[in-house]
Length: 445
Image (cartoon, rainbow, N blue to C red; front, side, top):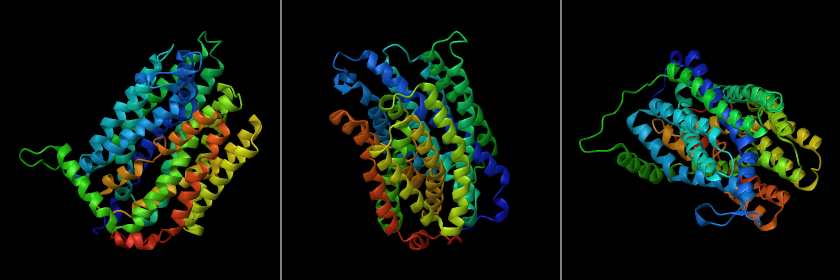
């Protein structure tokens, strides 16, 4: 492996990289976690028949299950598109330009959510598909910069600081959204209008702050020209096929990837559907839900930084295991004991402490296990189950909810994802994975 000189690890570039997490976390927090689930569900409910069903594209769907299904569909599309996009980025050396393109496509689709009202659930679902697909694509290229801007021993710290700044950025915009929601009547607008403004503000925030990484991130390789008669899409697909053929040569990396796909599905489903659970099962108001998520954002900021130090003491893998044990416990608590809004706030604080740690440390650990020059390809596979893009978890949640009518049983189904991921993670030989990829061992793994 060819090392990058220490002088190339620019603090300015790292801070610029952090700012993309600051930028797009507004979409993750304001749109996915807080507003769109309850809002799109209410739009679908208004369009439903007397039995509570809607018929998108002629398919009978329970109105309450529409949003989980849309999340699943958005990620199913990513299964096909993101790996090819990652291969194109690695082949063409255009990942910075691709980051910018998908960031702004997603931002403008998010701004357009302002126009979703009445019974037009199909417009809301369609815009979310575009925005979430773009969100996932942007994260692929963003994550693939991590090995380029940090040394092996810096990786946990840089990844954790990126996650922490993301929580802070998303939280600050949510402060504005909370104020707008609570003052909607005074300002002479409806609650629904305040929600639409809040979702559009996330797109604007995403667009504005993406300017910073576009200025500061460096493109280290010159753009690669296509051979005569070639196309990036076909070459990217061929490169992807080769990568998938080579993946079994890195069995420990593959095992970690499967483990991550499972436990992160549980994490992402909990994030994406927590607001819907709170509103429908506990009867929480929009204001209470925004306050809860706002609290989570600021505690998670500190939690992401805290687990960076836990990783230095226990090792990165063991620190992730600790977070998964806590995640599993919270799922069983919700099923068996959660009854009040106050308990939901206490549980939210516990989850917030481990939320950033489980994700930031997983990202940094995976970055050690992949071959140099194929970062975007491997992170595209990783991103299939990254934050806000899970499909198995929401699908399981939606199916259990549709067939049982119980939100608690739907939440309990997530325990299987945490437990299966935890068992597989314990089986991963991290040192072997890093050596097989041709990378140096960091001090703490």
